[in-house]
Length: 531
Image 1 (spheres, rainbow, N blue to C red):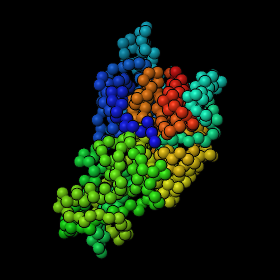
Image 2 (cartoon, one colour; image 1 turned 90 degrees about the vertical axis):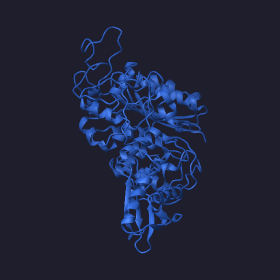
Image 3 (tube, one colour; image 1 turned 180 degrees about the vertical axis):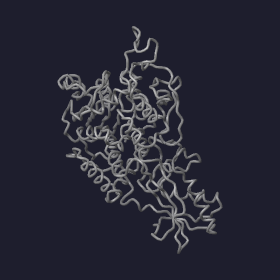
Image 4 (cartoon, helix red, strand yellow; image 1 turned 60 degrees about the horizontal axis):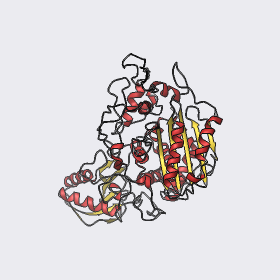
């Protein structure tokens, strides 16, 4: 199976730019770095911000000004930690500067608030855009999107009804994220195969079930009666065996802490086992062995990758849990603890916890999942949603848990079917109405716990699976989750119009025959909304 969107986005090279940090309580300029560097979302707790120095077009500035996707300052503060790429940090700083208005220079360039003839068209400042999402307007601020549905249909129909590019089954919806009102629909209630846009639903379900500050914990436990040391998997696929953990939970750190605890007890030799019973059922995804994800198990290191990659397809170890336990045994040995070859087991309730390591907060994991289209994280978060809601932690239980959470939120789940958390299962079904409702829910200022759903969306021509797309026109203005399977092309996200309207959209195409033509058609439709 070919899944183009899942190629490592770092290979986009110089087309990927980092979001800039605002260093004063005012809006700074946002543009492209002279020598763009690729941001790895896996390094969730190692802040390395690159300043962006040269403006290119007003679109880039507008993209930055609306990067927060209408985060109110108080809401942003409550949303939790900010990721190391600077994307969310820049959004926070911009949200704080609510009292600033102006064009590309935000009122501080030559000539004050005016612009010279021939200068780039002023971009909407963050303040008005942020205010707009709250449903209010200010002088010069953003109003709700125009209700001229006929005009919007005239623009989108020729693009989205093109069967030659988008195949035999197409569905779409566009909503005003300020009001939630639908502005455009093309069979918007039709349930089609969503591919990786499924991850938007997984993200919302996980965040509402667990909360943005929840962390996934891996631990070691010592059985008092047998002296058996159990490595207990906590369902964290980002657990890393690398020497530099870059803010992720480190298997080496766990080994060091465990060795210290064992030595205090006078123990230098252990029988090692590992516990994966947090999850139930088969660990093999319905698509079978595939480089797009490892076996779904509660214990793995570096997503079972056999290379140094952190995203995209990669060769995987045959048994991630066993491989992680063997690596752990090696690290114990470095600290003076001899361990037997590991085998599967289950920690009892009598076992004493010796040491723990925890993942970055769920908000950061959601951002990584969406930006990189990380299938391993998606399946893990779906299972954690099942565990948190009392469902069986297998594929069926995870799908049922996602559906139940969305239904509890009052979202239109009719016709939706979730058979996994990643969207790799071709039997998944989602409607454009549900996808846009999910985006509207995440944009609601009263739901700050869902903010990572928006901030994690890839930015056109800048980050993740959109890094190599939108080379002109809507670069920086479209933020969307891509979806690509053989015969399936989808796109769902947000877009900011030139006058500051914030829209949510979902475009689904099934039975496509040319993936590149379909991708181009969907990108043109999103660009149309931004123009």
